[in-house]
Length: 514
Image (cartoon, rainbow, N blue to C red):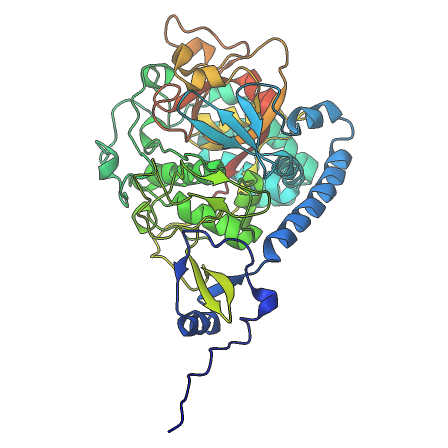
């Protein structure tokens, strides 16, 4: 009587050159080989091979060299500006340290450390924001936003052309229209900000689409400028969030702008998924698995057609316990939200920058890994999207008046900036009621960060006893480091500070669907 044995499983993609030779992360879920192969066939999984991350890193290095050359050409007459924003990570200051992926670690206080972006994204921000700003398309978008929000009497008094007439103007002529309007910011005052509007939430749980609170969302508990002063967008902001140990600030800045715009225009306070947006940025648009952070300019210009899901569909993961254990490899302990005793319980997680679910299998003694394909694993549509952003800042050429004017006309402004070694951290740990000092000397720059500007308060409108800004006033900035920092999660930036340290300032393009 003969014996038979089952033929070993084979698949055309599960061969030696596609194996994953490194240690399989604990976050990977095991699938039987036939299930793994079937999901490769139907496109719901994407292989990660031993060569993918080295290839990604090599491509990033090549891109960095190209960006350096482009930036040198764009800033040939402003090399001091370029040098201010492109400091290589180093550890000569006790609060800052280089990370293996080229970014910065900033120790905010004894309990919290955050990531700041490195030079690759600094160059990318400077190049893309400047190139975009200097196009007629961008200047027309800015003018259209201004025109839509200006008082009709102001338009008549200034004899401003409508959008159709402005289209026939040159870049220089549209730029000049924007410059003149921006410098007249003192004449603008948008929405009245007295009483809370109907439907204003009493807490984070009242936001439409609220998840499990893993992002530590909380409603503002301000006592400083933001509490004592009325400004147009005061009651249209949503809950303060916490990005934790990941370099995902751009996703929080953009999502905060979208949420605020929805509240302003529709009277709906929503909680949208930053986790999903950051996943798409890293996994799809950038195509990477290792290395955190992203350019705000790039994200805004890649979001055409992007559709949001609610926070409840994919809760944010703060990954407070995550560590890098080797350059160019995956992370460790990404899927622990708080302590090692509190695992993240959201919809997807893996030891990667994008945190899409990871699966593994073994065939012929070889290990293989793959991620969920975001094009096939589609989360429920919350009904909101956005288009590209318009740039309203050109470092060293255009000042902050464009941003001030937008805010005075009820338009939120996203900011990408370089963190100075001194001047910001004190405000973020509750000192000076969140007011950031603009120093007479210029301290060294470090890594990059992004926030949302939701208001501007001129010196003449400051609460009694508030130290005046050395310029014309303070921007009210919403951060994503939780409610225990600054003034209930907000900081107040002097306009001269923003002018020195901003790499880009952006609004959402008018008319985009939300």
